[in-house]
Length: 267
Image (cartoon, rainbow, N blue to C red; front, side, top):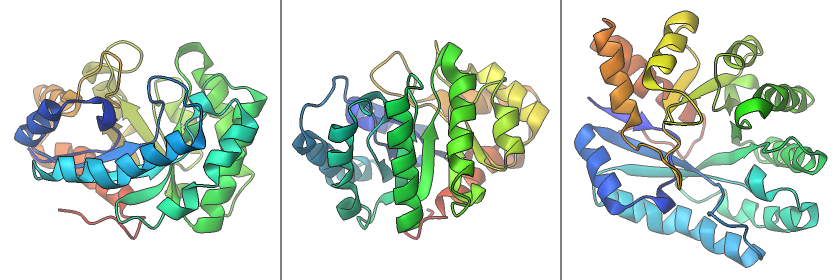
């Protein structure tokens, strides 16, 4: 079965993971900017990271027939130091024309602090100015609902950024309805401990439907599974979904959203 993994962090995954995903049918990977496992101490560190996302990872993925795309931003976990974050943001425009860059992301919130909100709004302003797609990270666990509401408020303050150009990721049972009702795309993340299981993701798809949703693993430094999407496909087959219905969610939906970038080319 062919599928797209629209949100994964392969800078911290092994080459064996690329190989396993290719064998499972992965055609395309989207890699948002995120935390490096430690807080970077200079903007030069971010420049090197953005270069890794736009030059090295596409070559590594291509060895296995996978097309690699990425998103550029200062991630929420490193947005607390506002002067530093703004200095890093000055680097972003020079990377937006790279052929594998889809937009600004994953921006959002970590602990819902005023400083994080300021940098979130600055990223949204940059996305409006440069006409970029936006990928948004919602906080973990008990802060998710509050953070999601703050994010929706910040987005609604910039109506120039159409809801069809924004995907709010890591939605769960208590946040998916408000994201969908606000007109934005929603992401479901299958992650073993802090997000959704395949069964919970399948439940949400059956309750809320298949439109304006993508599914991802967000595999990263933590205990995570780069083959989470094929495992969801197995769950959906067990529930009687047809191959066409499964591919609508796992292939056609991410293609539709990512095609909002002129850099995206489906395979």
